[in-house]
Each structure stands twice: as C-alpha cells, then as structure tokens.
Image (cartoon, rainbow, N blue to C red; front, top):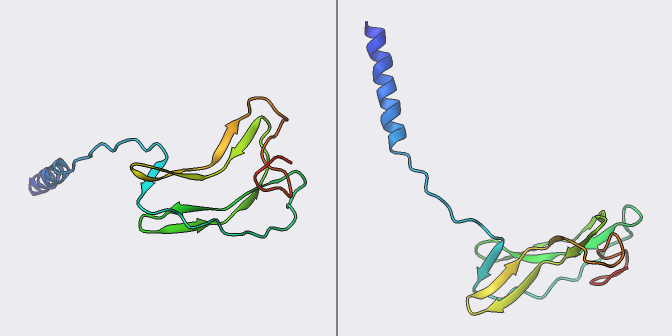
Amino acid sequence: MLRRSAVAGLSLAAVMTLAGCVVAPVAPYDGVVYVPVAPPPPRVEYYGPPPLLGSIWIGGYWRWGGQRHEWVPGRWASPRPGYTWREHSWTQDPRGWREQGGGWQRDRGGPPGGGRGWGGRGGRG
C-alpha cells in the first residue's frame, strides 16, 4: 500500500512539473540576418594547389556572430555537376546590413560543374 501511494505521489509530481513546461513556436529562419554595422573588408587568403584535380576554391567570408563579425576561412570543395557556387554576400537596406549565406545553386545553362575552377577567384575556370 505504501509503495502504491509513493508511485502515485511521484507520478503526480512529474505531471505537475511537466504541466509547467511550455514550448513556444519559433519563427522560421530564412537564412537572412540583419546587422547594424557593415562587415570589414574581405581578408586576402593564400591557398595552395587544390587537393584534388578539379576542386574549386570557396572563398572565406565575414559572418555575424551575434555581437561582432567573425571570419570564416575559405576551403576547397568538389564541384557539383549542374550547380554553381553562390558566394556569401552582404547588402545594405533600410533595416541594416543583410547577410545572405552562400550555397550551391542549380545552373541555368553553361558548362557542367560550374563554380570557380582552380586559380580563379570570382569567375569560372
């Protein structure tokens, strides 16, 4: 009998504790961040030859870390046939500086693989 009342008491305590938990819905994140200050100029990056023939260089960029801009270094990546790498970018509008992350986007014509080839920054090939 004592054991049943202890289990019932613990169950009631657990239910009361969980009843106070509220999960608030969060607005969907669309990948856009507005910042009150402009990012610093891009850093000059020195990169050696690609690790694999055909790799493309994805340049570094400034991202907003909540309190300040933080540099994210560039890296080599394998090209994706039918896609082009879109650079990370910042634009200014009335709400502040808008951060737009980089990513792969489907080609609309052009050579297969797209992206930037070895040795070029900002262009094809």
